[in-house]
Image (cartoon, rainbow, N blue to C red; front, side, top):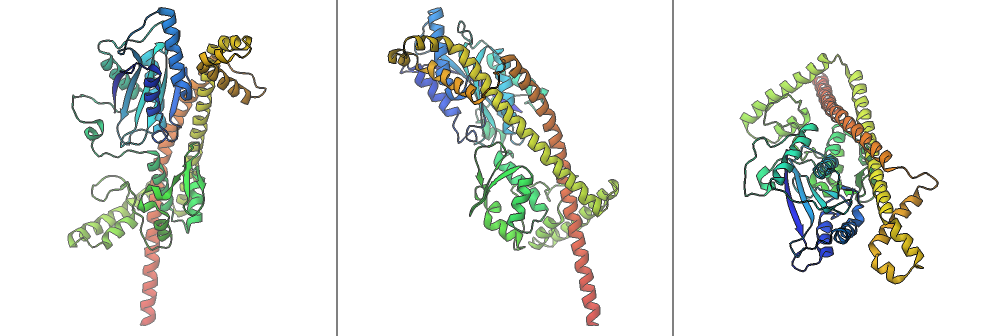
Length: 469
């Protein structure tokens, strides 16, 4: 489910276009909201120099058309797209935002897409240059444009398997309050979820715990307070920043058997009946809390039902303990491999996007740079064309990094980008399926281990009673 809004960005009271565009782009690209900038992408512009590129396009538009407006002049459009909590990943939201902006503008205007993860819901901020790529026409906010934008967003969501608002109603509440306190799966939640999965396997100590996370594709910075990041991310996240239940002290207590882990997200709720398997250890922990005789009777029945479900799962899938262990490990390996492939594709998509932008900037500023060279590197010329020269140098530096490699064409990069996006979409679908199967197997194995442990304790108690006799 996604909601949208379209807001024109005006020159403002002070009449400074450059200040207005820098202000809005600076806000949407805030590293603290975009995972240190990893969730910012651009079309026909470099996100780092987008404000300068938008201003350059605006100046060329004025020179070509002679059209000048006052403080009500629209220099860009701010498009907001928000998603239902827990339904989409930040990377996927950014991809959908990119597709929405490109289809809405028919690929004729430069734009940047910044995905924010600092709120309860993942949302995109898209800044679209009002001037088209050929600098001879401006996008106009036509009558019914917001409705058309919403329909296009709904279409893209349906095409990619996400929900939409079936019967939207007007309201004065903020999107956050309107959605309610539904769960949103942010990147920190991904890390918590990975920790929950690892703790199901009962690692012996912190070393084994971190090794399991490493095998799942997480990069680890060890120290007094360890921190982790997913492969491809720039920013590490300390375990202590995930909440008390995920802090180093609590985790060490869990390894020593002094504490039972309580996931932040209630994956297998004991308060509603569903088809999911619940962890027997969690039910035992609830029973020990002493919530009253009624709850104790209910939990004992529920415990027996979950034991029966666990044994039924083994029977239906023709598994014994050895084959269950092997299948669980296979699913874990498959899950980790798919995740690594997705991360590799994300990294390549970022490279292509940056290189494509540099090629466009290089072509657009080549004439200016040649005139600058012929002027004998005139300081006056450099001051007048500072933005163009900065973009040209940035493009040349990017090309230098390629070394002796031939610079690819825009078409070949676009074709590769489209192919990778399709490949990622299929991989992500496979990943979600394998991840869910892996979770179920981990719960089944944890339950079997719990049952075997209980059986061993009962046998030991029986032997002790016989010895006493």
